[in-house]
Image 1: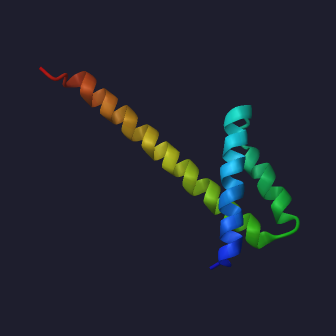
Image 2: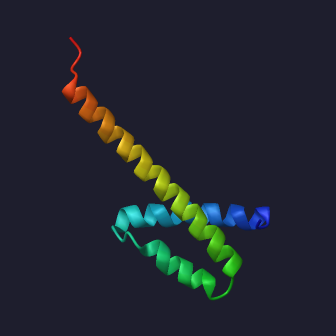
Length: 79
């Protein structure tokens, strides 16, 4: 397991990267950032990519649930 300081740095960088991705529309920006990190610290690169992937998976899961609930409510309107 990575040092807690490394994880904290990776989490902050992941949040910043996702914000830039959302603003610019560059959905693979995190891969470029990962390459930059990997050139000097494989440990930080791995922690960053884990932080990015978990956040992206969380967002996808939440979007899926929103769609499911919307579909359900449309199919079963309240009386």
